Image 1 (cartoon, rainbow, N blue to C red):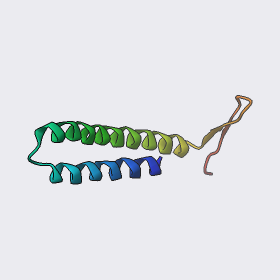
Image 2: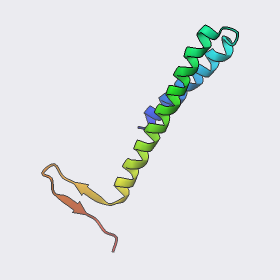
Image 3: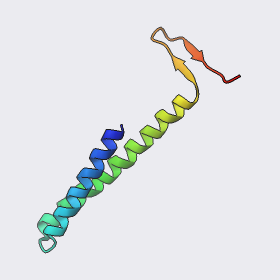
Image 4: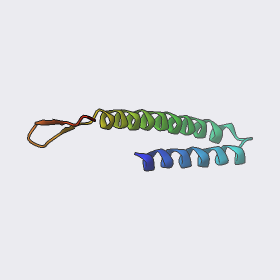
Length: 75
């Protein structure tokens, strides 16, 4: 997921550079802005998913393939 976050940031930066290069052509800039905003939303969603995974791992409950649950507690 961290690689996905990095890829979204890289794509957003690329769109930013393209927007700056084509600033005087609205027919090019408008779609690039849309794509840039889409990358921002994707980054946010991947971040939310990563936080969810981290929260689940912090619970110290691990589910096995057979459906059983192992709960680890600090004693």
